Amino acid sequence: MQTVKVLVTGGAGFIGSNLCETLLGKGFGVVCLDNFSTGHRYNVEQFLLNPNFTLIEGDIRDLETCSNAVAGVDYVLHEAALGSVPRSIKDPITSNDVNVGGFLNMLVAARDAGVKRFVYAASSSTYGDSKSLPKVEEVIGRPLSPYAITKYVNELYADVFSRTYGMECIGLRYFNVFGRRQDPNGAYAAVIPLFVKKFINHESPVINGDGEYSRDFTYVDNVVQMNLLAITTDNKEAVNQVYNTAFGERTTLNQLVGYIKEFLSEFDPQIAKVEVLHGPNRAGDIPHSLANVDKARNLLGYAPGFSMRDGLREAVEWYWNNLK
Image 1: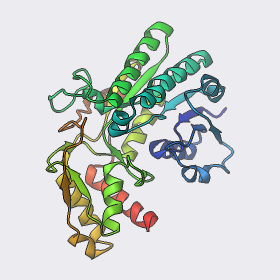
Image 2: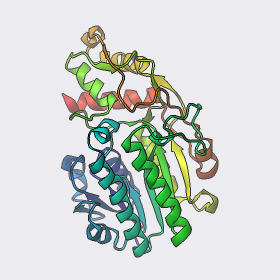
Image 3: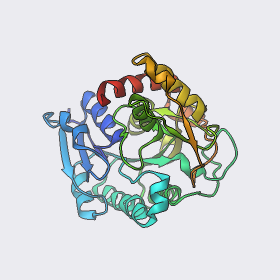
Image 4: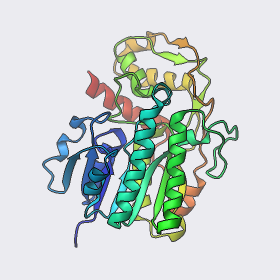
């Protein structure tokens, strides 16, 4: 049987490289497109000897590059984007160019190549100032950052392309994904790897605000499961939808820090003594986020395998072994 081929844009990034690894392990052909602006070569070096893996270095802002990447591809998992709310506030133009212009290029290229399904990384930031909890897909508020606007525009474009050109599109609204290979370095590092790195170095992490803001922290293996379900489902009702991609459990930043200290102290008891500092709230942040994942359970058969605590324990062990 001919190998089913999947293009993973941003495949050298945190989530993208985990998708590449799982797909290769299941016998898929994988094309990785990345410009290495936020992804890393070391994330995909282990795949280069696999005959089912192809690496294309290029930028989704270039339509010709996108067209070359989708040639002969059955499915697209579009992960490439400039993440981070603070980054988008500092430089909204570049975030828009990549997240909107690049997304549109990928949609056009996928349409013209006749790919079977286009699955893309949406974002929980789309819920904006909506105060309802838990978040259900049909109820959103006004975006609170340029990044949130770009991810909502992705959903609008995907919907138009599905209705206008007959494309099959599925959006996955990621909720604070964490896990192995998430970069702890740089100005826009995510909170979990940043805090883990600080504690390993016996440095005090800084919590924005009083620490009572809460998030639906979601382990990367749950996200990988959702992507696989999205490209393999034969439930026609499940296509051309947007899904919360989360565990469905809320954790405050104070609780998160407590868990990180607890798990890291098993490797280094001195970490339990490291104090936590508090700074001002961050512009564009929503106070609370919690997903209702019933839609994904009912239409895709989603069954998240990792709670926040279970995933965090795995992630902490990975960082302990790879950051030291």
